[in-house]
Image 1 (cartoon, rainbow over the protein chains, first blue to last red):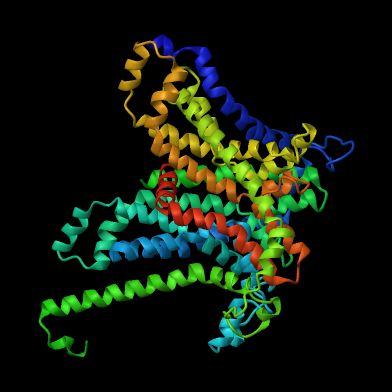
Image 2 (cartoon, rainbow over the protein chains, first blue to last red):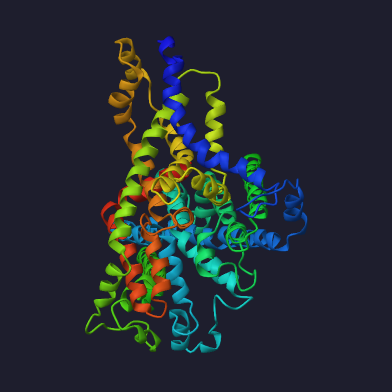
Length: 292
Length: 289
């Protein structure tokens, strides 16, 4: 028995194909980027090794890189403190509604998540359009016409519009995770609370919220790391503009490589980006673990 | 409600509970509007003339639906071709993701070798690595290997980037499955690979479903790799049709909306049919992942 489970050939056959694909398309490119980042290559032609010059610039001098990180932090902040409380609230009330309506609402809230980001992003570009967009029309209709904006073009508002769209798209995920967490709380606990005369708020703060803690941790760490990794909505809605107001790291490095022809510099950004992601994940998990 | 003050406490509590329930339902209904109204707006204006979008109304009644918008979407938008490409790439990718993750997870959890934990953690590291950081150098690598602008340029990275989550879900599930049945089959001289496909696979069905659903949604909707690694039109996938079409018909909004509606349709239909499985799969994938 033990001999079968230690058979080297079998282990190799099982594990090698997956590891090969993973290494080839995920790990190898990071190492290649680390190397390209040390050159002055433009993507074609000859190049020289320039050492850590690109990395130094990314970390210490690049203001756009810093803006991109701050934008990601803003997105993470709004996701955790706006989207998540709303998602949790709706998870709790749909659970209370029960029956067919509950399944209906649960199904509908997730609809935006199954639609391609390309569709939803382009749809929102139209909804937010200043000439014919749905949002401005609604504002006109309810006599709030003075609030009309070029939602994606205004330098102080664009970031919030982008954040709103990303939160809209991701709402279903956050909701669903809280919802399944609430379904996992044993009914007897809530029943016992009710018998002891707990009101809705006490039920939430004394039973539901503490019981949800593990789920909250998972959900919040997903939110923080995915805020950092946003790209498609930005690429498709504003491409980082106006100016660099809505720039995010992934979109920035993409622009540097394919529009600005700074291939080696873009690779340096990519490597710093990976390191930032790794550090953030480790830090977030450690904070949660020590809280536990 | 006005007489509530005079009612018995029990009745009063009942009225209150009912009022609360109505409020809850109304709030959820408002949220529903928030989630789907933009989509309804999109579909509505895909059926009218482009200039109607500049009118005052939120929605218009398409007295004579302008189906030619959809005709344009199907012909110049090449939706059918992109759809076929998407189907091909997604099925092959998801099939490989399931196969490779089951094999790897079995190797990591059931086989006994010294470095199994190390390699498992290396794969799980993939969770933290952003796809976008690999775009630049994969672009170069793929063109050097002459696989850029082919389905391989999508299938390979799609499989690679979905393996960490799939492996995480599979190893978690395998740990919770007792080994007894396997052991007796092995005693009877069954080989590991046969065991894997005849005995282990069926037991893993719930985890396999979760992996299929999560990775299918990822792969089906993926855009940036498809936009980067494919340079010609031949193998482009569904999300790209909108991007392409927006350039060709930049002022014909209705036709653009028709393309968007059409490309959202397959996933919407799949969701309506499979919604229970999908929501369950997503929740399981997230909490275990």
